[in-house]
Image (tube, rainbow, N blue to C red; front, side, top):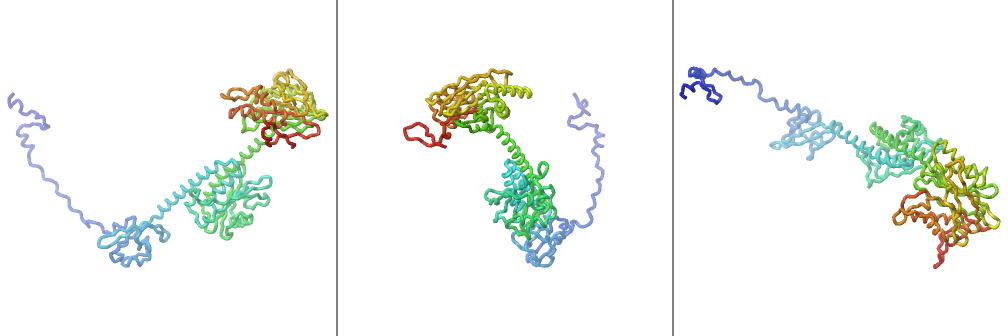
Length: 600
């Protein structure tokens, strides 16, 4: 390869090789450059006063002698007392002469000061108007405090389900946050209105209302005194009646006067106090009204009224819930009372003893039942039974059974025929409602003898056989059997007659006794044998004590386990001419194990 072979080739570094003539033209002198820009005309910097005029803060510059040398337009507007050329202290603004600058109120505006030292002993004051920002911050804090207060109110009023406790909680929470004195009046019931009042503690009386008072009350602060009373509906102040009608009274000048006449504003000066009445929302009508009163100097502004109305809305919801719960509880108690077993009616020559423990103690009702009805001939119809199921449904069925017996015993007193009539009535009822329920029962008629004994004629409908505690101390099982009641149209009903001598007892019980599961492993049934052993030697016990003993030994066997309904009915023949005896908790002499009996 020669030089001619590579002449004109690309050297590979980005430059293109050209012939010599072309290279000469590429390196010719450059063209002349553009002339430089002319310098700006006018002043090099704006005037100092022109710059500070647009500051958000006002400036006050003083020399070493405290004479004002410069006052910006903003500072002149915020602090018009300051005059250039005069001593700053002559302006009479105390905050400008202090060593600890901060915020102060001047001419209705909130100002913030900041002092900066300058050279040669001079000083500069920066003055800023923070009225709007402080107002927004205060409003935000107040709203947060109101929200926190209402949250506490909702939490505290969510627990009481009793109207009295809910009403007391309402007035206690209202003081001192929204009132110095709070009075809650419930809607009248049966011509009478109940009221609750809370009065602010004396050591809180001097505080002014502010957002700080909206914070939840601490346990160390004194709680307001709460009392209550009853007022006739006709004696309620007209403002309260207007509030109970759902309106918020607008004539405020006579509210305090009416509250003072009712005796609700102790310790408040009538001349300077203010009051408002707010209805408490209910289901269809207001549940009550809330009267809030303040001492002189603590007026209700619009924000306060909004807070009172929000508080009243939560109080009304809590009271409505409590009142609804009370009404439902009253209905439930009434229904439960009608479904509870009724104590047997007093009969000549008979001492009754009963014990009852439902499977669900909270309901107080169950599927076992007992009772008695007096006959015109001096005898009594008695019964003890058990229906299928537990709880409310079983209790309702027992109520139907007892009502049927209450009506049928007036047309039939022979036990077997009476039990068959009851069977027909139950079949008709269960088939009409499609329930398919049944019952077991022992039904009998007891008639006294002149010598003090009793004759018991008993019919059995699939129930456990009764026991008889003889005067000798032995226990006999009555051979009584029969078919379930309410299953077939013509059941087989067993019947037996038993004679009780004075001091002897007949014991009826439900399967909740014999089928109670307990023992070491909690799975063994109590059984008939243990029951016989438990009542052996108890022939001297009065009937109430015997029934209680059967219940007690059964519960001891159960421990704390679940159980079926337990019912016990004991009939004891008393001695002629002597009242029935009752067992009292009187210890006997040492060394004896016989329970002492005393006349009631």
